[in-house]
Image (cartoon, rainbow, N blue to C red; front, side, top):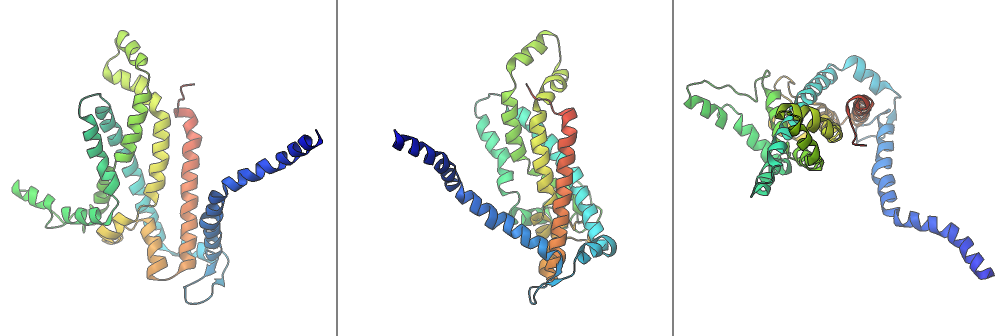
Length: 300
């Protein structure tokens, strides 16, 4: 009897320990690969560091210079905000429209879903970025096609007025991941709602705005947050296709940060830029969740 009570007493203390043992790989990754580098990055943002010399403490001097004396920072921020504001809604709208077409139970539809999802698997690669550069170049396929119609083309990538829109178009083309999530959401909407709407005489447009869209608002919220976070960090496409030009018209924030870190080796300054970007993304995400109380509807 005493042995049983003793074992129960020790079990109360041992069970929580085993829980931490089982999640220890995640905890090790969290502290070594996330919290550790983030702490080091924040420290470096308060220093002047060029990889060749030891970091020199300068306090908030990097932040002061960014906000008061760096015109490229404001230009990069403006370009990035334009990219986010235009690419994210267009991508989500296009993904939802395609998902509504592919949700129908038609033979062979899975093949079409795979085809439409394919650009999201390879859209951010260097190869696709290089193809996109050739597609919209002065001698690219687009200009050759318009020349057949008697229309003189332009160098879409190297023209400041159009260069950013080629990157936005590439982002919209990568709608596959959002489309798959929308497909899952559309399949979860009860068919009874559509049948009731049909009995009441509602047309397809009315049904979409009264049933489909409200029921998809949690999915829209998820896609919106994920796409905004990803768009703020867009780098590969701008680096490969335009390298930030012409005249900084495609100098997105991540590319600007990369230049400061690996072209000018100003790691402290780049770390400060990274923390500003984290703050911007955090504020945008918080605002979306705060406003979601008014437009996101849950079934319960």
